[in-house]
Amino acid sequence: MTSYDYIVVGAGVIGSSTAYALAKQGKSTLLLEQFPIPHTRGSSHGGSRVTRKAFRLQEFHSQIMMKAYPMWETLEKEARVELFKQVGMLSTTHSCHEGLTKYFTKQTKLLNSKDVSQMYPLMTFPENEMAHLDEDAGILYASKCVMAFQKIFLSNGGVIKDNCKVRSIIPGDTVTVHTDDGDFQAKGLVLACGPWSSEILSNIGVFLPLKARTVDVCYWKEKPGYDHSKLPAFVSLLENCIIYGVPPSEYNGLMKITLHDSVPCESADTRDITDDELVARHLDKLKKYVASTFPHLIPEPAIRERCMYTITPDTVSIIDSHPTYKNIVFGAGFSGQGFKFAPVAGSMLADLVQNKTPDLLVDEMRASRFVTKSKL
Image: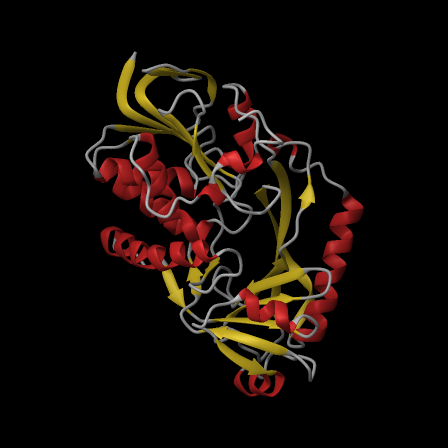
């Protein structure tokens, strides 16, 4: 049986970041992934994710983002590949301006609809529209980020085994992991399993209120003669939904615009079995929004791609250790917005599995906040 200092299960962006952090500290680390790498079954694939320093949730999220930016820059330099493009981010609303003010920090500029129309004539907004502009925001090239973490992890002596599903875990001072490709041991285990988190955590006595959901990411084609590549990323806070998008960066001439809303599914393994009527209603909302806000895009998606969300009741991710076995830690429920946190989340998990106290790990991110709803 092969032994390591640490084993990380899940080679998405959170698991890969954790493995990277451990290997850079000189720890012998095994990174396990149930699917062949790369794959599109989880939450870390695709060409782009929006990232920003200004953030709408708790103050600790802004502190995490301030730490994450230089960590992304370090990874860029190490991997010698561009991972981030600064394009700015426009955040708009016409019905909940007070909410929009709370959504952001003093790092943003407040604009009215006239300002927005002058700056971005390819976008159309109502006269009473208000917006914040975060000039530091931009795009993370998602798949490249995951590959960069894995590249540096391997260069520091890490081992990756993909197409290797975990079948069971035996806790103890030494953790044993049984897989399709043999058994492995380590003094510590990190579980970063995305939408499969509930399945694997419940097998070791951790029950959390996580829900796997799906999102159809849509790409919209430019009409002939128009170039949307100079637009910022954006998020529109509407009365009954949130819609976000990025300028063409993944597919030539196609702008990514989609709902920050999701459709329930039975499990991560049945993600393609969803409520077709609800999916159709979501798509209809998007078509109407694109037609009114981006008149120079064809209001019919050219490409639709499915992505997984893992949702917590309060939309805040979970980073914590097993209540009995402190050498087993987990990160889960990143809720469709955790990609930008990945370097910090990985660093936290790497510290936690080594029985260190992670910087910025607050009680609001601990599993204990759901103690009345779980057995943890």
